[in-house]
Length: 430
Ligand code: GUN
Ligand code: ZN
Image (cartoon, rainbow, N blue to C red):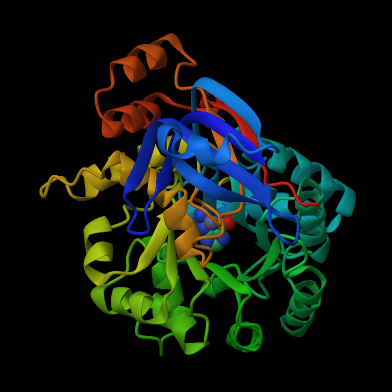
């Protein structure tokens, strides 16, 4: 049994952050050999029971903070090299940068190289699970799944479905895209810690036939994820209205094709109305909030107050390469700014613990993986980060001055980056 002695951050079921300045985290393999949290709390309360055991291997991390690995609810691994490409908003950005780049992923060896770099970058930034788009090529899924499997990571990914309004090189065929999706589900879903996501790019780039087929697969494989984009940009919404005039709203397109359910995740959700928001809640569909992407592409601001009033699930996401950073600290900081900006009249200030929860336990819950990842409560898989809150002189000064947990977390959210992550630890399997 591994016993960590360190400052410890975790979350109660209702999202309240729990903090022990001198904490104990006990980790041991379960019956299948996967390392899980056995006990978490204060050293004082737990050490007699756990640290005194004959097989206890004690790891003392003075001055460090042990926290759940971050969960990125929406990212595009093939856009690692598209990050920072300038364009006039979403649709020109897709046309000029993203589609030409994604066309390269038919080549498995090219995809393998990017997948390895991408996973290195996630881990450097403390991200232990992501729900990622691949490209429309099956090879791009094989590359990321094989690379994540070799590292023992819990990773969710899927082949992009896009059978129209897409250039040669990324456009798939209506039927073949669906056949390939089912083949990949059977090849990868539930293998080790991997999960498959049925991934129509967004309503404009799939025919109604392809979306109908995606919905049929979503019904046939209820524990597979569904992953797409919705209501990101006003030009995009106008386009969807032309293509699907019978739908009440952009979100309603997905509902009509059976693509809203638990484990369905939609990036952005900026321009929803209250009927859409109620539908999100009723269907247990989740939103992946991507604030650095929304700022980069000038898409708009996610409405936290209306989301909370409706009561649907959400969590944070980088949306690299539309997003500007792999770092959860940059994403949490942008979410705070967006919350302020959207609600400046009401004066909404998202609480530091709530921001952190949105990128860990909250994101896991929104993915249907609550109690599995994103937390360090007993039973959770032991994916975690060792944070050095004193990495820069300014951080050392600010975190030393913090009087409350909110002040400590907020100093890291505002000032932190990849250098805060001293180590990322993936739950080992036998
Ligand atoms: N909508 C359709 N495709 C994409 C994409 O690759 N990135 C973002 N941000 N939005 C999209
Ligand atoms: Zn995206």
